Amino acid sequence: MKRSSNHTTTNRLNRTHRHSYLLSGLLECAHCAGSYAIMSKDRYGCTNGQKDLRIAHLDDGVCANSKTISRSELETRVLDAIPARLLSVGSTTSLQDEINKQLTATTKTGERDQEKLKSHLSEVSRK
Ligand SMILES: [Zn+2]
Image 1 (spheres, rainbow, N blue to C red):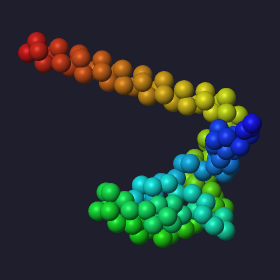
Image 2: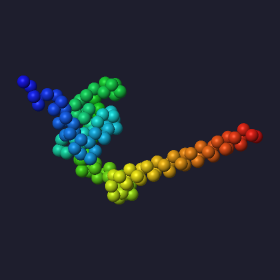
Image 3: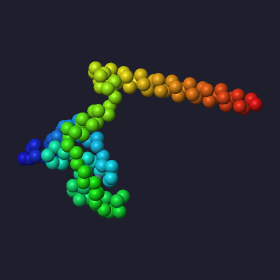
């Protein structure tokens, strides 16, 4: 009888292991658009390049992007790029509130612009 050595178990393990870092699964190679992942010594690099994968949109060539970056440096750079205002928000709930507030404000501005356009259009039509 077979048990626990099936694919489901293996895949589930792989999945949980795959997204263990802050930026796991979020990075893309600027050259071939392949995924940037931890390769060795805690450094991110292009996985397509590492596997010598032939890329169709690179005329079946191999990705030439051999740049790697250490995980800690990359995480620092990304966190530095996020406005401090967002990071100072205490919890994810209030972060979501903040995003919703911004979205509502943007939508309202859009509606106002639309109203302005409409009145302008009817004004032009009258003339
Ligand atoms: Zn690449």
